[in-house]
Image (tube, rainbow, N blue to C red; front, side):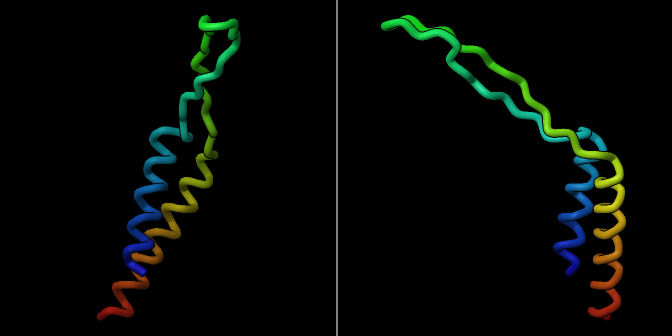
Length: 71
């Protein structure tokens, strides 16, 4: 349980700091024979701050419960 709690806390902190998951996507917009033009699109999947806070609380709760059961 503690491991899951630590993972949740780390993911929550990442969500709160970065505000979402960003990635790049390369897309071909023009192709004619050997010539082609590509575009790099920067995409972002936003994560609401409340999700980060709830994950943080749940992770801390799992860590505390794991310590009580282990002791």
